[in-house]
Image 1: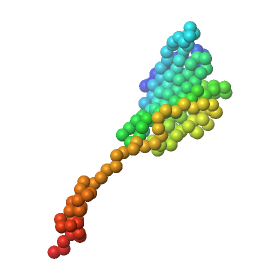
Image 2 (image 1 turned 180 degrees about the vertical axis):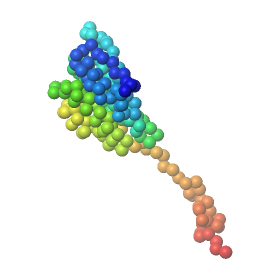
Image 3 (image 1 turned 90 degrees about the horizontal axis):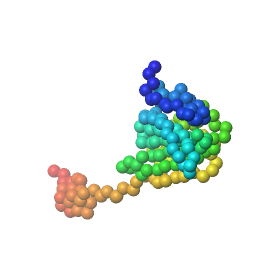
Image 4 (image 1 turned 60 degrees about the horizontal axis):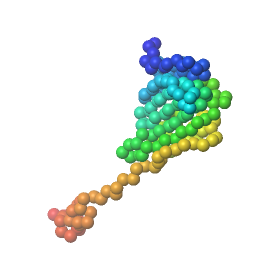
Length: 178
């Protein structure tokens, strides 16, 4: 079976375990509309770090990002992309990684993608995400869950009785019967 979604290996043992688990589960047949994984390194306050970023989308306009750093910091974020009928909305947090092995992280990521579709119905996935990631601390949100307000539409000619459907053109009464 061809590996259609290559998943890079990391230098950090913890990140490497996660990337191997993600590859085992999702590389050849991801259950997502779109799936990508990348690694990079950087520096923050003089410290070198390695990062593993995982992205998945659904056909319903939701995007899930899982980012892990070699110091065992983890971010999970779920976003509904803005559409004509719904504004953009994001929810995310930094759960503790205590007790989360690479297999549990891969399962929770898959389940986070599944629950992200609740955003299509203007429902927050936050309570379920908290349970999936065993998170009790602060949650960051941005945007609005509600539907976009649309300008009230008026039918053409609402004020003119002769323009109403069924009108014979004389004073807005019932159609003439011949």
